[in-house]
Image (cartoon, rainbow over all chains, first blue to last red; front, side):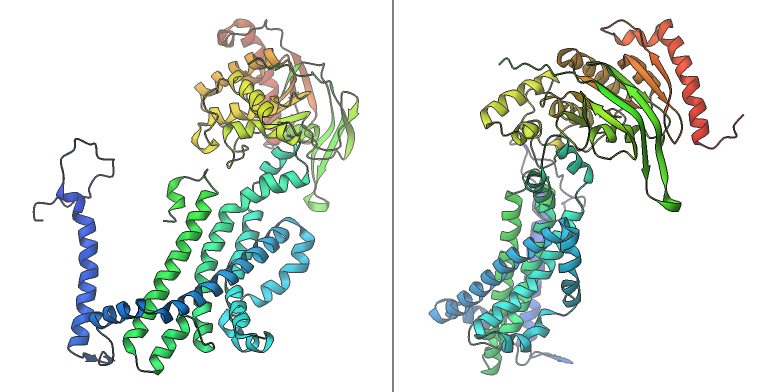
Length: 281
Length: 269
């Protein structure tokens, strides 16, 4: 390690004949080391029951969490919670996508739709979706439908606003070009407006997916009998502290995978964008 | 693959065209009593200082803006809306970024409901006409500025327009590319024989390309002088240095300079 140069490994693609260079492992190993140190700090804090204003007496150790995770993922009931959450996310997100993209396209394209549909959306937008929980419970007949409603609401606003933004950001010259090539209204919408707004729509979907997870977990913690959020909250109530952390990590991984799949599916529909933008970096 | 590339050449009649934008204190009179007639298959360059309303003339012929006064007629029919008969080549960034080069050129044919096979065959012959055979699958973002403009020209010509409108199409290109594009345009035009209305502020470009050069006044724009360019065709790039060309250029330049002076608010003598 001591001989490794301080400069970054070159970004140019290595040729087959290039000799193996330790420098190319430098950054990955630093990153692995960083995670290792974090886990070690967590382990020591719980081992020594650290009490430095924040208290680690009741916090499970990494080992406890791992053991609990192995047990939970070996049992059927944990999957029931995961599936319940995934179903709500999928439903809520799908409804938000259809309604949000549909309304966004209409509002962005027709002035009349903007004047009639946008004001209530703008009015309700500042209210965090979680604040809707009590109303939602009264509004919807079943617990499942009220949680799906909260999830939909969370995803809806970023989707609709990014769709409007995408339509409004389309270069007017492209619309003119289309008309002078013989395109009528429906064709302009299909061939210019829709693909032109797509990058912004996908951004909205990606953000919406993140927000809908936040809303889902909050709603499940407040009301419900199933779901990873419910599971995590109940684990606290029944003093199964390791389960809390397994619940948290599961939520994190599920949220990350959902956002990743939204981005990957989006990128498949936008082959004209350069790779860098697709990675979402 | 032999697809006829010839276009029906249109006759443009612009009579007393007036265009006003905005109202009250934001009122801008872009054109006033602008009159210009072309014969079918003619190449006319509209030359003028920036802000003189050159582009507005094109937009009126394209059907993007409606006249406040006067009329625009192409082959006897008044212009009321945009049409594939009057295709426009813009200065830059007008290709559909999400469509491949081939799909961009096919666009007009698709709008006419022509099937995929015929579409592709026709688009390919127009792409090779502008020297872009082999780039069909590229996206516009992967092309140089000059290549993008060639796609823009092919995309208009594939519709066999009566008129091709060109709005400073080479203005954003470097000098070498611009000259190559001008030569390419002339050789393409010899094949397709459509009427061209070409807007530019570059005197060399106007004289090198056109049969007639219409010099515009400062705003509100109308035609100050119509100068026939009687240089033999095909025109090699060398004529740019010929005494004949130089004499014409001096004459046009003097007029343009006077009008830009006016546009910049110099005191009138």
